[in-house]
Length: 239
Image (tube, rainbow, N blue to C red; front, side):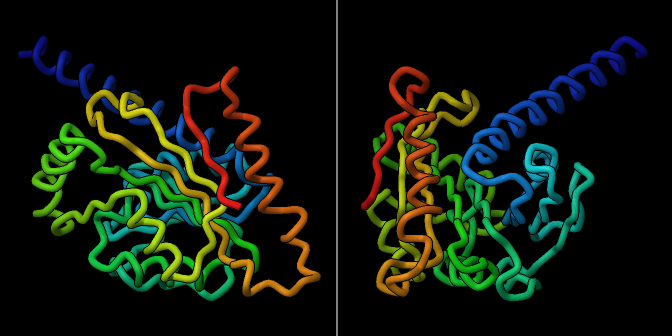
């Protein structure tokens, strides 16, 4: 009996370490796009490990937001109803949505809330599963069956549909990249990353500093970091 207890404890520890390690990899990827001490909101933070690691990397407390009562990691956590953020306007420099939007009932509503809590020239960093091929659609269907009793049915979109949703919510798409489906072997689905600006070109005054510095510089830095010599991912800048 003691042997089974010890083995079970070891397996739980291994699973936890795997989650923490994967969260660190995601946090490191996100941190490369943001300046130190940026104020960040992690929407749909789940266990909170990404927000926890990101806080250390940015040297700034990251706020986690989700529908659960608490998180496994000790972070600044705020619970919400899945639609309206209990957060003041213009509070954050960046908002992270890591494979979250396909879980929400109204993606447009959530994105408008994201835009509301972002400061001028703020950034939204969005990761999404894309049902690009038959295999991907099968993985998405399995994911939906797993989560529909917890958060409701999932809604997956093609990449061009997401662009329409982002535009309707008032965002400008700065950059997008296709990610390898094999970055998570337990969930091998095609993925897409989007970098959005809350300040669209047609809304900016001609003298706005964003035209010749912040978002352009961020996008260029990402492309340099993901050049063929350093990364297997494909990038596309949206001018």
